[in-house]
Image (tube, rainbow, N blue to C red; front, side, top):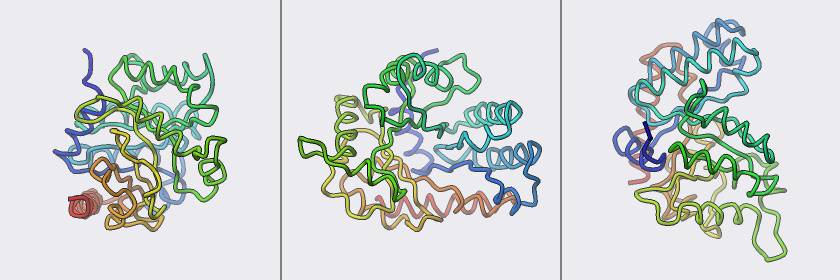
Length: 278
């Protein structure tokens, strides 16, 4: 079965469920806060609780692959189960793996997360373009073939990112702006929304000097624990705010392990985001 393009599926999910992405970040301190051991059993309990509590209400889950990979093959098995169960509940899965390489290696990364027969097949994948945007070609091509999406690191919320992303090229354009321009080209003519998005931090303040109108989704980390609020989104993203996918992790997850607490926290964020973006 051929999937609709990711952008179309994301637009529908955001319209129906609200524009919120909930991260699944089972780091050791959060497992401890939930009263769980920092082992595979704790990882599985945590992940299952989040997916069961929110899988039928949130638009997007964003599992952070590293927190599963650190447990080896058993952790990857937990991630495989989570991906399948989240998608069964109607949520889209954005795998936060930030892969980036060249040639056959990039192709292998793409096949891991974007090939339909992969046990980690996800609706979208975060990727790093800092070996050159062209290095992402295998992932771009496979995403188009299978109706998936990519989120390219463009203007990230971590302070260290500025030394690369704000660096100015010989033509006077920053590296971050260059990535946005590539995405705008990828999404040209797509309706209702392109499938190739950018990662743009919600903590960055006024970005009016950047062209964020890439006709694709803008994944906005930084809501909650990093200090940004839903009310900040219009000031950061301007006219592109309707295409923003705000990402919240600890702001929701700290309300577990009670399922009702998770649902209430996610619902509050979703309501606040909807009110802010109109």
